[in-house]
Length: 81
Image (cartoon, rainbow, N blue to C red; front, side, top):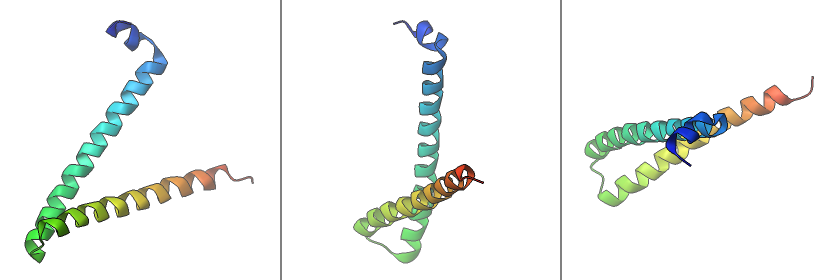
């Protein structure tokens, strides 16, 4: 399958666009968290291990809040009237 055939198929074009947007937002999130955690690490005098733990914890909280907002909105929109 050539590159042009992939771009002509609407389903594959939608999948490619969706993957690209996911990659974009993930990179943006990693960049924002890196700057925030770097500033906190300097302010709080954290060790490298603590910085890694803080990054994981920050992403976990961010994704939990985002998922709960999207999931609740989906559930509330689809409930019977």
